[in-house]
View 1 (cartoon, rainbow, N blue to C red):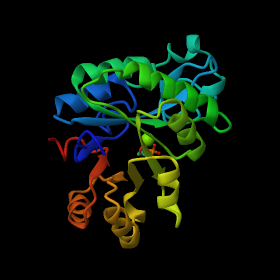
View 2 (tube, rainbow, N blue to C red):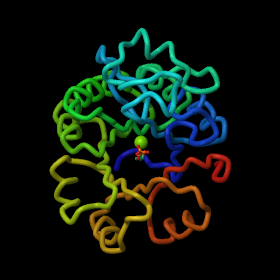
View 3 (tube, rainbow, N blue to C red):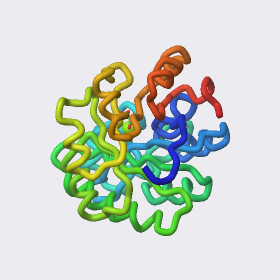
View 4 (cartoon, protein in one colour):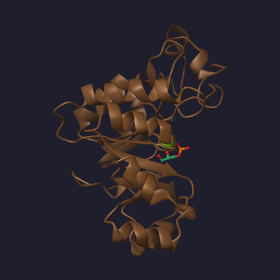
Length: 235
Ligand code: G3P
Ligand code: MG
C-alpha cells in the first residue's frame, strides 16, 4: 500500500491518556513512540474542519448542541478537556508533519453533510500534506465521502471503514480504489481476512485495548491495530 504502515495507531489522538482528538493527545502519542495517529474530522457551521468524534458537543467539551450548527467563534473557545481546545484540522496536520506521524484522517461527517465534509477534507489533506515524507491515509464509514475523496484527491491513500465488512467489501474497496480495510476487531471473520490476504490488502482493526486480543489479531495476520491504551502498547 505504498509507505509502510506502523503496527499500532493511537486512536482519537492520545487514546484514553489525553483528551480525545486534541493536539495534546497527538503530542502524547508521539512522545510514547507511536508512529501513527487516527483522528476524526467534522465540519463546523462555518465549514471549518475540526477534530471531534461525536455530532454533539456534550461528551467531549463544555459546550452543547450540534457541531455542524455551531460557529467557529463558539467551537474554538470551548474546553475539550484539561484546558485543551478543539483543534482545527489544519493544526493537527501541521503537528503530525512536524512530529513525523502518519495521520489516519477519518472523515466523520455529521449526518447529511457527507459530501461537503469529504470535499473540504480531501482538498485540504492534499494541500496540507503536499510533499510530506509520511503521507496520510484517509478513511471513512461513509462510502459517499470516500468516493468524493477518490475523485478530488486520488493521490491520497484511502481506507474503507466498516463495523463488520459486508459481503461485497472487496468490490467496494476496488470501486473506491482504496488500499486498506478497517473494521471492528470483534467483527472480523476468518473468511474476510483470508480474502484480504489473498488480495494483499492490509486489515486494520479498532479498537484493541487488551494485550491478549492484540496477540491473537496479529497472529491471525491483521496488519495494524487502533488502541486507546497508549500506555500498554507504547512502542
Ligand atoms: O478509524 C477507526 C475508528 O476510529 C472508528 O471508530 O467511532 O472511534 O471513529 P470511531
Ligand atoms: Mg475514528
